[in-house]
Image (cartoon, rainbow over the protein chains, first blue to last red):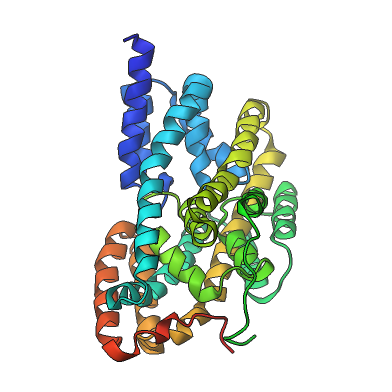
Amino acid sequence: MSPELVAWLTLFGHFLLLSLLSVGGAITVAPEMHRVMVTRLGLLTDPQFNASIAIAQAAPGPNVLFVAVMGYQAAGLKGVAATMLGIMLPSTTLAFAAARWGHARQHWRGVQAFKAGMAPITIALLLVTGWILAVDVPGVAHFAVTALAAMLVWRTRIHMLWMIVAGAAVGMLGWVS
Amino acid sequence: MTNTEARPNPASSLDLFVTFTWLALQGFGGVLAVSQRVLCEDKRWLTKEQFVEILALAQILPGPNVCNIALTVGDRFHGWRGAFAALAGMLAVPLLVVLALAALYVEFAGNRFVAGALRGMGAVAAGLIVGTGLKLAPALRKNPMGATACALFGAVTFVLVALLRLPMVWVLLGLGAIAVSFAWFRIREGQSGEALAGDDGP
């Protein structure tokens, strides 16, 4: 096997494994990705790794796409295939099977207990996610923008894109720093 | 809105693909908030309760939550083809967009207006998630554990993860196991159908 193929397979294999560990989203295993891609395989530099996460956050779409940007910077479209297929295949297969299993048994007491018991935790975790995103960036203005957006989503039907555009505009004026 | 009112279904796998593409492209800084709005309010394919149930499973399993939601919703309405269509919608076009942005990034990375705009968008995105959580809270009204227990489990989750910063996985598994056990005892054998009659409520 060519060294290139070995690197590709190593990358793919690691991401297959990381997929099964990514409870809470792919970002939770980012430190491990850093270890593999930057430290061990030397496929990415530190700035490239950080830029991948920043780019995906600026783009629309699921946050998991930062993985595609990493793959692209490491090895072009072949890299995208290795990282994206690796991170998606195991978790997707598992989620598909679990959702079907649960839905076919929705009258089971255990399945209903799962739904009922997890519901408040699920909703609280949304508040947690927003809270952490809001308070980890210093600044009163940043927090105020978050609070205002939360109120508007909760209480109005204003289109979310307008809120994002407004946030970008306010930020561009330098008011969110 | 009444319990008996029929909800619309996605017409086809193509409908799922287009809907998920469009909602993914609106999701800056995360797709969860816009997913809830499109699926529950614009398309009305799911009730709040159904969305929370699907999200609960998506959160506890590995993988991106919104991709797990797309799969489940697609499968629910149009089988494995629907699941594939919804997931493809969530990923395909946004993937092209993000790769195009990656090409532009080098040029704009140092621009202070771009950096400011991203900060502002990030602040809004955080608010969208919080607002979505607040909006879904009424789904707990029909919870068989009762309002007090729900509030307690929610509050403990917030304290453990947001304030004490314990790893989310352990809270999901540990507190989750306690909550599910508690719910198990509150759901008596006979009335187990009740919790399923999910709808928007009064």
